[in-house]
Image (cartoon, rainbow, N blue to C red; front, side):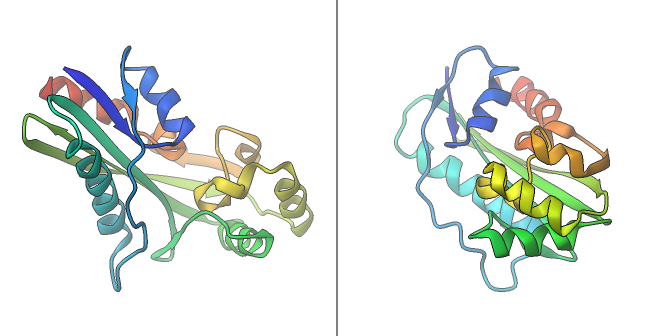
Amino acid sequence: MKIVLASQSPRRKELLSFIVDDFDVQAADIDETPKRNESAIDYVARLAAEKAQAVAEKLEQAVVIGSDTSVVIDGLILGKPMNFEDCRRMLTALSGRSHQVLTAFSIIANNKVYSEVVATEVNFVEVTEQAITSYWQTGEPQDKAGSYAIQGIGGKFVKGINGSVTNVIGLPLAELEQALNKIL
C-alpha cells in the first residue's frame, strides 16, 4: 500500500526516509490557528489528525501520515517567528530554561486512525542578545517552531534533552516506526 506524508516539511520528509523506503509527499492545506483555550497537546494532536484526514480524503488505498510539532513553555505554544522581534521574544523566553517539544502524528490506513503525541524536554543555555541577533541573521530560525533548529546552528543553544531528538526535529521515528509496524 502506498504511504503518503501529509506535510511539506523537508525535515519530516528526510526523517521519514530513514524508516520508509518509498513514499509520496502531499501537503495538507488546513487552518493551523489554535482554538480558544486549546491545550498544546490537543493542538498538535488535532493538527496532525486534520492534516492526515485532508490528504486521505483525496486518495484511495493509501497509508497517510500527518504530523505537527510545537515548542511549549509555561503552557504557551511558540510557533514560527513572524519577525526578528518575535524570534527574540521566543529565544529570550527559552534562555536558561527547559521547555517541551510536542510532536503528534496521525496515521490513517484502512479506515482506521492511529494517533500519538510524543514529548521531549529540552534544556537551553543562557542565550545572549548578541547570540540571538547573530542567529537570526543566519536565516535558520525564520521557519522553525520556537525559533530554533536543534539539528542546525540552533543546536548550540541546547544544553541537553530528555527524550527523542527526532521528535524535536519534527518526527519521532522510534514511535512512528512502531506504529507503522502494527498497522502495516
